[in-house]
Length: 610
Image (cartoon, rainbow, N blue to C red; front, top):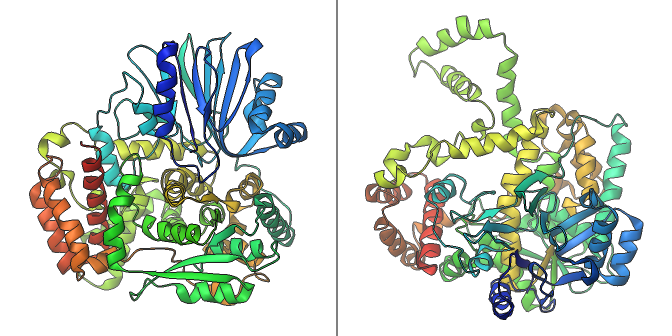
């Protein structure tokens, strides 16, 4: 198993051993990386795969992940004695700034008996999760999963109505919340300190976007390619390493550069769909042929989805509604069956170097702010909004543009959100709605968005997505699917030096003339095939909504759960019936996605007897 867990408190020794065993049993499987062994009792208990302690000082540490050390002495210590010993050394030598010396992916805990202090932290991008709670007995309990934390006596599994509402809004439960009222998650780059003064949290790392690099574009492009290769090298690919391959920019980059480091062709895993508009196997084959990769492809069917839905829904420790977990799982499953123990994933490139369509769209909307306010309020808006609605297409488009441009960021990113387009009172049961704050999702978005107040619009959106798109969603998706399939996963594009380079690369280069990934594409022009560089962004999207219209096995796997969901007094029964009708008669993909989110929720609630 992998992950960490433990507590700060005074649980009796005779109960501590069995409690640690129960907590560690609820950590994710470790892909054959070895069992956990608990550290000795101090003022609490820690458990994890990488551990160290200094009994005479009353200090114990536990660490999960693949950390990278900024200090050469610490890196050497990690090689010789293990990462936990390096962490212990860093804490003892530089306790005030030890987190500045560790990068990569990690979740850690440090227990100091003499000071009565517990420190918890996760890496800068939240690649490794960590949950915590305070019990009625004043113990602080933590674990890599909520299931692990729930094993501790006194921790209750009370579901949070607000978290369910947030799940419907974001299709995940974003940090710092969890699905349970009394359990929280650490956010990316966050540290928790618990001692006799109570619990305090702080961000030990935040990116700085206010020092753009004035180096020429050509030099920066050469540097990017060099850092990409270095990041791949740090992953140390071998014959048991494979790659995800969607045929997009990032997975093609990772697979191609990784293939340069191995003696025989690297195996790449791709998923296809026999559905128009969704299948990208053509581009995966182009990338595989270009780099000489050994492509392993699999076409997922509606029957596969129907069979796997229950496994996917219950694999997560809280509801998770990203349907692309399905292709991620089948890729990882096939890789494991063929002897692959680790996969390299391309997640992160879009969020680091500007590859999502919304980045370009929001910059266009933002230009409306450049128009003098008096001109907008006295002439433009009165003229447009007093004309007949259907006067002509240009008027309609202009009016829609202004309506969206007037919505402040980051709320404007959610213009097409189902809960924005429909009133919550039409969706949720009145009693349930009385228990939640419908403004909370926007407030949480604003809180994180405002953390990068020194950045321009593009960088604010990128930093925003590091949490909401990567840490809360995509990384959680891929990590968990790889865990249940039995393989490890690394993210070369999330290397600390690549992140640092992104923060100092001017936005005017990242998206020159508002073109997505223009800087990145120029840097990789001699590496990637032209078809990959010029293709539209796609990814591993699942044609669930299209299939649900005609697939009887899929309907049989979904519709009974929607009927059960009607009885939970979360949603209005009429809403679910209307949604099913809209899916069949209107936009199958859009409404099908909401049906997937609802089905995952019901399956998860059933599995947890909620």
